[in-house]
Image (tube, rainbow, N blue to C red; front, side, top):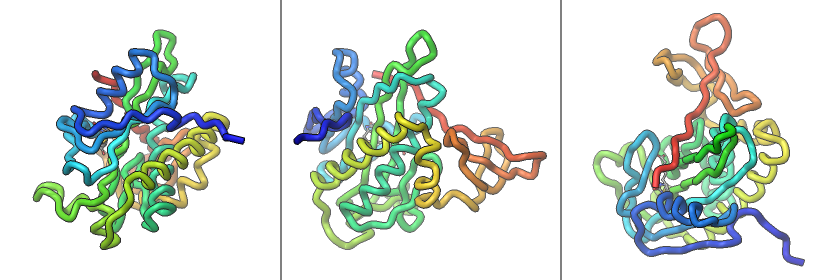
Length: 248
Ligand code: BTN
């Protein structure tokens, strides 16, 4: 008997797009169902966090956006960053044999360099609940080099393992892991994933910056996915990750 799944039941695969986020935003506007996925071999205007560009070389990355429509308060949308980071780390272990780590909230690193970035963009409904989230995921798979400005911060699965990787298998592994972890999150919130997330992160014990520019040591993540930082103040400082608005 076929097991029904929320994520990946419909995959729109493109060669070149501006951004898979923009394509998925249009599909969402046309009434696409939750779990619809857009992939591309290349983006001409790939979006990163904080308005940055996301660089790729044609055919060498897994680039995808996933439409999520949880009927939850918008304040919970940032937790999807952590859900996605966990799913990607698990998928890289399962499909590529790579031991990755999550840097809070959602960068996936190997050997301290970024192999995957996650971009959640949310549309809120008038009542303060999530309308939909465009969950963008970019994985560096087959690059053998990066532009000078990324060289020290980025890596690819090929650089890490010395071999090529099957991108379809990787995509399937990420969608499987995301389907499972997203289902658990819907059922029990981040509290359900917290222990597992802690096992995959490199952030706890590291020095980090809080939102107001102070520095401190990340000591834990709470049941909402906020980072708890010891910044030398009375009590711990809670740092909440940000989710940008979805632009078309
Ligand atoms: C980051 O800055 O770390 C987030 C990068 C997210 C990149 C992915 S690639 C697929 C999707 N489409 C985009 O334009 N961006 C995301």
